[in-house]
Length: 184
Image 1 (cartoon, rainbow, N blue to C red):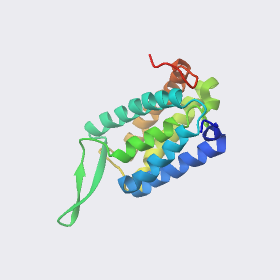
Image 2: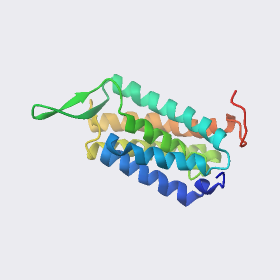
Image 3: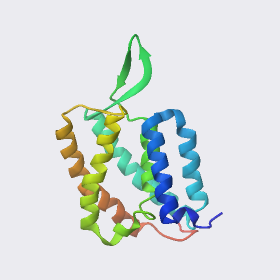
């Protein structure tokens, strides 16, 4: 425990990729695997309390933005409940797998994406391209639909991520570090 192995660039990056694909391909059905991997991240982190605080703050911000986009009809998530011959659509709240994905992404911000903590302009560019691209890919796998055209949604997401990714990186400078950091 507290070995820091989950902070290794490759382990952290591969762990996130596994969780991303599990969430996008299987939705809520494989959440136990997702939460187990996230639990391992904290268990094998040198500063689990500080990391947990940071993850919770960043995941809440990201999921909150996605919840707002869902509430406004920009994102439409399909419930895996059949009614007649079609899937029931839910536009009120995002699914639990999306929160797990936000927790997982937040767990990369100090580790495999830590390089960007001193490169905010590059973070903004990568956020605009990679962040929006992630949603566009999830749409191709039928995990989300867009209430507007793909182009409009893509541009909106690129703008959001242009600001969001550097913001989440910036927040890491204000979360106390240390294994026994106090939460203030």
